[in-house]
Image (cartoon, rainbow, N blue to C red; front, side, top):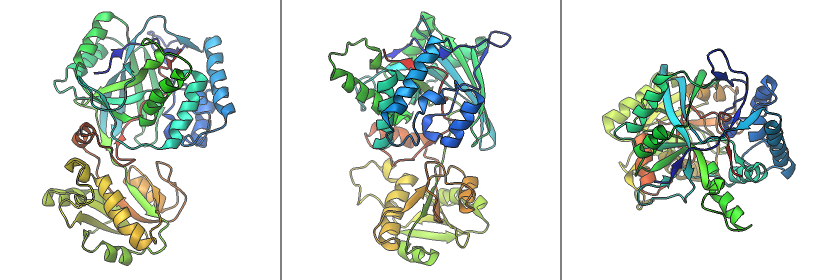
Length: 457
């Protein structure tokens, strides 16, 4: 697999709590791509040196901003280094990173190792490669590239998964965490799942680092979250190469990851539902007519809160995919199952079956492109929002929010409720060299930004 290494991280420096634990609750932030102007402002109000000030210099981050924004972030970063707010470690280290959180009414703990990986092109390689699983947008890559050029640093880690079939790496992390108190903690509230506890253990002894590297030998790394950031790392090396040779030991040839084993008991994936709108010819009756011969629609009793249980029962009974359909105007709920057991096979014969059976692929190609756009919107694209919970769907219907993932302010017409993408499907699709549609997975919780920064010079 790509070389796994410790790194000389830049970290916040504050007076620690009693017991030697450093609390950075007011200095870290969620990843740049889930923040807006309001949330950025709230973080900076808590502490003007919050990492969001340098990691999110331009909004929205899905598009390239002015050069001055990125130069300003870089100037602030170097100022914090100069005044001692931030400091770079003298000795390279890895960091065990644990998040304690609630999800679907249950308490979980997910642990990973912060380290750097050799930057290699996406794809399978002898001994293990770095594999993507989702398509990406061009705008965020331009934004991240401009920030990396200006700051010569990587502020936000990439979330990677590895097989860890024997649980060797996970057990090693657990032994470290049980041996002593964490070096760094932070308490945040991300909104979706409530309070989050972040804990960090610094690992700089060769024996433990070597044991961790050995546990990952030969494994693929699946990018769970951070495709744009990894593409940026690849493009940054190409940028440096236009200025001259880039040595094999150049810091830019290593990219900061947090690696989590798929055997970790805290690994959870949530759904990313779809809310469709802006369709000129939409009505429930028109949708039912257009869906005839493609979807079996079964009306269910109850409101949206009952739809997920009905979907699970239908999927178990039929052994195939089951989607939830919600008409916002009438507030009627349905379970939809494909008439054809493999409805995308004719359109995508070269794709692996796991890809063709994805709920999100069925939404994209069977419902949106196969029914809604041609029959209900004159062939024009529909508008989307991407909520992660039934409560968010309800709030969007009530006009309370736009929807996670950058949904636009429009009148919602049709909700499509999906089940979480199985981890096994992520693995199978990635190894087949395929890419899932955008917003296919919702790995929760996100990794915090600001616990460690990777300098590239």
